[in-house]
Length: 422
Image 1 (cartoon, rainbow, N blue to C red):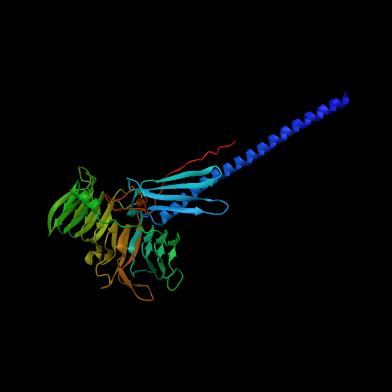
Image 2 (tube, helix red, strand yellow):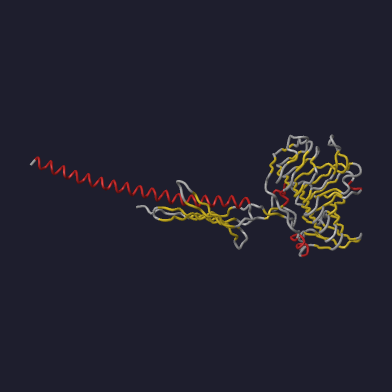
């Protein structure tokens, strides 16, 4: 009996071990298959994500590009992705990336969709100084700018101009900093080759507002601004044409919306008490100091915009022969902010701007003696940014704005392929 019992035990153990071995082999086979399925699903998903990122890079290089591109991946990881950029009814781009990954069980496909948030209108008052084209005008010793400076063109330096905030240019600085006579002082650094900022094609927002709730005139007009009395605590503008008063505009109260425009030249001076934008289809001439009634820029609520379709010009007249002070945000859409006869006569001191200056082509305001960088004619510059304008919602009524060329991602959706594990 002992021998038979041992034989039965051996047979039993053999059967059990064979069963275990068979199960282990099946588990190993399933594990290998599951791992293959997981690797394939991960590969398919990563291909779709890669396609989305490649598509984003393509779109950010050229935001006007629309189309579809397929890219095939070869090597250990095989497959392809196709990214497509279309335009939605809202006018915003839409990106879809689809991957195709071959597996032993067929093709796997994953999708990534990217939607972009609506572009927001940025105020040009965010810049202390901005130009579309700097021309051959130089920043000199004695020039000082507080606030952000940007140009879409090349910017020229000589001597020791001072920039208190960051300077950016879509092109380059000429000469490079530290080369030749460029000893400019950048308190917050500088950057070249940044994206351009596009100017509007017209001033319709301001001019439409002037015809509906504001004041709209025809021909050349003179505007003098006055602070309000203690009793009413608001200011007003007196509008004349040919020496005859044609209108008096109360700047606050009633239905006035803060916009005054004219089809012709506008001459302006005085003290502003309130918020106002003055627009011209031609040129604006500053004939004397323009001050806010409250010149404490931490507490003042006074705000002026000078918006011209061509030039904004500091007049060459008696009041402006010894310095000129301007509290305003200046915008010259197709022209310049410049000084009349800047290259003739005796030096006129310093031109102070408290606010911001944006112009298509940089205008000259003075000339300097070669070598000494001392004032020869016109003005030296002192441009101080009105820090209240850092708030994009705090700007003169109906002041021009711009849209950023880049798009912010509003939503990012990814499909998930679930492997069929055994």
